[in-house]
Image (cartoon, rainbow, N blue to C red; front, side, top):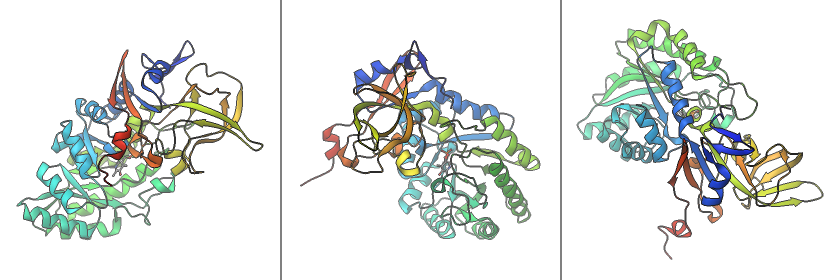
Length: 417
Ligand SMILES: *Cc1c(COP(=O)(O)O)cnc(C)c1O
């Protein structure tokens, strides 16, 4: 993991120049902390890797959607990959140009289509024939032509968790690649669609380059056929999916990824603008969650470290069985014990770590849950009527709260008896 922005200094963990224990004491726990430096660095790695070809990096908003984080992306010239009207609203709120927004997702509603057409987004990534027909109708009613690509399903195995593999033929996502040519022919004849792109997104947390290369190869072949059919495809959207090092994993860099796909695309490149939709690899390593130990509960069978953060705050361990590094914020080199780190939520599935060698910790001390920047806060909920954590952005020596901790009043907003 690229944790250089989170470092121990004299035995105390810091986010850039900000001491995390002080932050926890001041703002309470659980608390999400992001490093602005790390987000910039991870985003710019894509810009650098693709600088020799026309490209657009559309940050996948669902990975972490806070306005302050989107503002960093915008300030670096980035675009947005959105999957809902809500994400369109966020992206527009920070001023990301509509010409840099692509609208993905398998279940766009008529209302969302109208909103995105009104905003003049760059492209709709369409995932089925019926969706194309509806978009054609909505665009017609508005007197517009909707720029589209079809999201094809290249049927490659991304070798990742089944819940985040999206490019296999049994997936709900995309269009089987052998049906794509027909759909493009049909779309060409619909007067309110303008097929300008070709798209895929094969999955998330990929730790190998070969599936990306295989997908790019299939897309390149399809591009050739579409050209024969007289279509002028100008955008090739390769989706997101690059994995991060959660724990002792070797992961490819943006540069490795770029080299491989450019290699495969070779001859097609001059006619294309490449679009990437990275989420996790931009924000994942750039965020952590601070929690506090409530109790050590030792039963005849297990040692539970009960913390004040739970599955409602960070659901990845419960949902995917994923591994997050957990270390004490102060003095992490201590004798280790085997424990289960669990939260207060009333579900046995509520755990941050199982059978984990963790430093012996005392009630009251703080732990850092690393690699929580992506699909952390954005997947959080109020389950068990738990107000969601605050979010903080560290930037050099300073920090600011970018989302206030929810209050009990927030929990009841909109409810009536
Ligand atoms: C979630 C998603 C992404 C981002 O994936 P990461 O693994 O976070 O990079 C990109 N494109 C689409 C269509 C997505 O659904």
